[in-house]
Image (cartoon, rainbow, N blue to C red; front, side, top):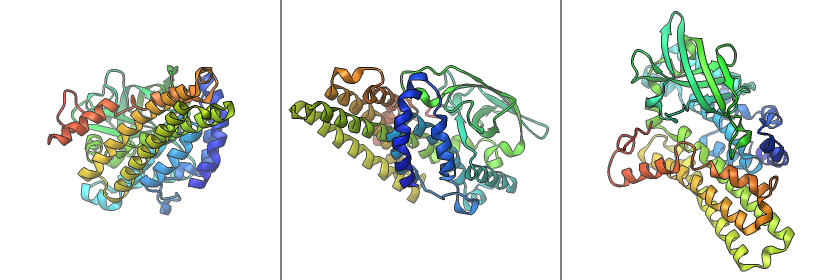
Length: 384
């Protein structure tokens, strides 16, 4: 699928300015992703998917982001859901003691994705961010399933997805945080709130939840798995964004090179030096992302793997913002005009260090770990 991603990226880039200007969702991009089978990327081959690993996802997300960061970011959410579900292998399910019904539901969700269904993530909340332990959305058991109530924010693709991964805390035991895959429809209401500086085409609106779902909607079939999964294998919640923002950073370098060549600015040593430093920075960050992805595929959840996961997110976020700013300066004032690719890429890149885990949180996690502490538990605020 890597070749398909490279084929689609220029098409996404050609439409990116319009969706950014209007803040409209890139529906044509997603129609092409569906047609090319990308929604089944993380689905095992036995269920009709491509059976990709995390490293393959990272390479594809990087290429898609070179076309349109917003499209790649929303696709990342779907890949995160399907990748996490597919990561619950039969062996792991047996180890965790998951019920057979949960495995049947897992396979059903994945088969649907391979058939073209796509999933969004409804996790963050105002005041809590993505910290699972502080969510105000709650669920309680009812006859035949669960009642979920609350409100989510920054739900990318809101109003367009076929189903939403919703995180909620148990009303009876707030220490238990669970995740549910809830189909779009009655009980889910989108409130248009997304009018942001960057990543304007992600449609990251608020989602109001007041819905009853059947028991199989509970991922894993056991309550309280969300916090455990986040701490043991954080790659989907932390590092999946990284490849997207490195792709945005590379697109900024490419756009600057095109602009500089068109205007004959390459004769200026300062311009050449900025582009050279940016090229090196993006290449270095990309190597870290790929190393983290390689380790995730080889040894998911291992302490050293998780260190690389947090490093990848930190470097991707900071590098994207710094490189995009440098490329805007290299190109000059004319690149600040609305509609210029660098103006959009500068705004999109700035979001990288703000998305969870933020660059400050990543740096603190790595610092606590380097000093011999428990990076998941030590700190002023809970990580999750």
